[in-house]
Structures are given as structure tokens and as C-alpha cells.
Length: 256
Image (cartoon, rainbow, N blue to C red; front, side, top):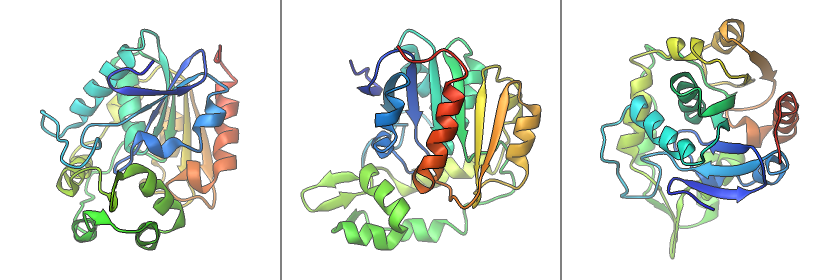
């Protein structure tokens, strides 16, 4: 059964909560859900400010707000979950594991690091503001984002009678990313006691060396560098991603 914040996608047993990255959505995990459902009961989650065009949140943008909302979602399951997070979703998943270890049994961290201080959203903002609110055709989405990310965004955007509409406000997405340039999350990472799988893309968006350092400082961390893959490792190198996640899940009780 769906909860107010989670959509059940199939499977039985240990909850697996899939947490998307910035500008993503729960629907973007469509290619991973079928095989993940062999390992547990799969749920997808839409983060605040990613729930549809014009759908805002009643709180200021902050990591704490995201983690509180995610915590409410996981708590509604009534049992600990494996968090499978990409980028922003990985950050919020390990912050939840640090704050509420009772809710999290393990974490998959895909291409995200704790410290982006000094980086700004300036180079990215003109492109994001220039995006049309709605794309008339799928080809326009592919032309804008490329074949891998284009498919991802087609699944994230609101579907309308006339095309595909952005499912959030670019101003809010910029605020979210801007916060990462003002603080770091090493203390939260060091507080994680659950097993973690760290996957870094060969063409990573993370500052060099940080994910390896996470593996060295994590309590029960496994690190994998996925050469040749872009930021969307799970879609850009799906076989390598699946093999790594399944090997990780096989190391502790999962499934029905």
C-alpha cells in the first residue's frame, strides 16, 4: 500500500526506498525497480520541491527540511529501510542514517560527496533559467539533455496534454544546490553506522578524492569507481550498477 510520501513499486520483504537526485523524481527509477523488487519491497519517493510544477513546500529550503520529510516517509513503513540514493538523494539518505539510525539498515550512495564548499551555481544558472517551462516533443528533451539524461527527465517531468512540463521551480532547484556550496556534511557522514556502498562515476560531479576518503572514514563502507560512467551511473552503466548493488544487498538479510 502506498504511504502519503512513498509509492510502492512491488516486491516483498525489506523496504528499499529509492531517493532521486536534484531535478529528479521517483518515476526515474523505472529501469531499476524490476530487479530491485527481487531483493525487497521497493518504494519510490518524490522530494520536496520536486512534486510538480507549482507545488511548493511550506518550509525554507534546507537539507534539514529534506531529511525531516524523508524521515517521515521512512518512519511510515514501520521498519528500517535500505536507502538507495542518487546524488542529492544519497546525501539526504546518509544524513537520515546519521540522525535516525533506527530507520536505516543500509545506504547506497551514488556519486555524491560531503563537501562542495566554494563551488557556486553561477555557471549553471543561466542554462537552467533558459529552460522552457514545457517541452512540446520528446525529441526536444533529448536535444537539450542528451540520450541518457533526456530519458531520465522525460520520466521526471509532468506530462501534460501538450508536452512535458518542468516538475518544479528552477529558482528552488538553484537554492538547493547553492546551500551545498556553503557547508559540508562530513560530521553526518562520520555518524553513519549502517553499511554503505559508495559508487563514484568515472565522469563524476564530486570533488576529486572525496568519495575515496568517505570509504576510508566510513564505519562499514565499500567503494567502487565506475569508469566510463557519467553522473547517472544507474542509467549510464546499468549492468555495473546492478552488479554492485546486488552484491552489496547480498551481504546482509534482505528480501522476503
